[in-house]
Amino acid sequence: MDTEIDWQRELDSSFGDGRHVPAGHYVAAGRRAVRRRRATAVATGLGAAAVVAGIAWGAAPGGTPSGTEAPVATDPIATSTPTAETSTPEPGGSGRPWGAGGPPVRHTREGIEIRDGAVVHERRDDLYPGKGTDSVALDISFGDERWWTSLEWDGDGGGMTAVPADDKPFDSFDAFVRAEVLRGGLTDGPALDDERYPYAGLVGWTGGEVSLAPGVTVDQQVLDPSGERESIGLVLRHRGEVTWMLLDTSPTGGSAVHEKESESGWLTFEQWLDEHVAIRDREPRLRLVDLEQDGTVSAALPDVQVLDQQSGPDLPDYGTDAASASAVALVEWEEERWFVLAVRMPDEDALTTYAADKAGVETIDDFIAFTADQADEGGLR
Image (tube, rainbow, N blue to C red; front, side, top):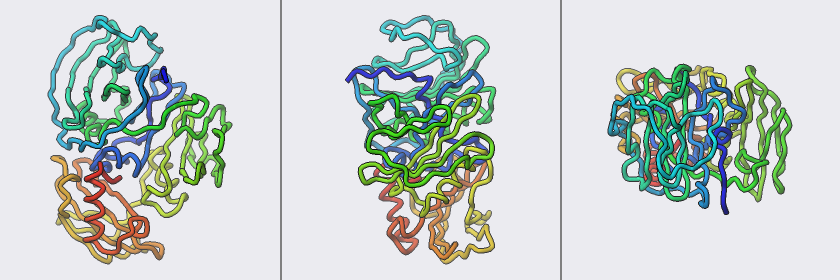
């Protein structure tokens, strides 16, 4: 099937700012990681000042989405090429018109296409060595607008992250690239067979009205969970699978974040929704533990009891050059047991929280083995 993707609409805006959603939160990424904490979002009606971030996956013309089983790099230092060259049209360009207010770069079957007249200030190649895909990060401007972008593609399709540099979700282009490497790049995304339902292929959302794809039902909805913008939380059921979703909108666009209930570390939709509303609203997220200077953890809330912990767990696939300490803890909170993986990053400690019942394990050693298994398959988020 030939698919023409409107990248201005399909760009992902799934994660928050650097303060509340550090790149280290995604300490290992890949195909399984996306299924663990799916944040495949779709942005609509984006203006020039909108923050557009995260991986947007779509088929290249004539192709279908496909993922990769290969491991991803954790070294953010890719080949760097400082430059300030004005581009000229490359042979084999797509010929598609460029949308107003969007980034001046996109992927094609042959590689990347840079808009005529755009200026590339810095370029990083091969962000994900070993994945079997091509990738590049660009500090690029067109007219008065400057973007930090990363693109990854193969013969079937590709994805792009684009952040307006002046909105400062990252302190530097280097920080942006590091976050992209840690996110893991190209993801398995749903084939957009029907553009009426761009959000996970399950729903559409226009003017505050939700439309359901055939066969999709709503088990639960929460109106306006975000205090800063029009939003809706949904529990969707389709072919026996339950998906948790948060849709929101703003003057600069709309987005969605979604995850299969069976693949989330949270026990309830309410817990999951609170987490993602906090990310969206750039508010503090739930922290069950604090990572101390000596590499141990302590309870971050009065009703959290630390039952067991292990500093410096043997999880090499979760380490990065930027991480200086890590620990895994088993805690009790709200009469449930939880595992927390804490990693110290330069800007903020990154925490991954997972219910013991969801992981199906009872001890620290079992959880480390579970986590290592997920890392072998691409990562745990």
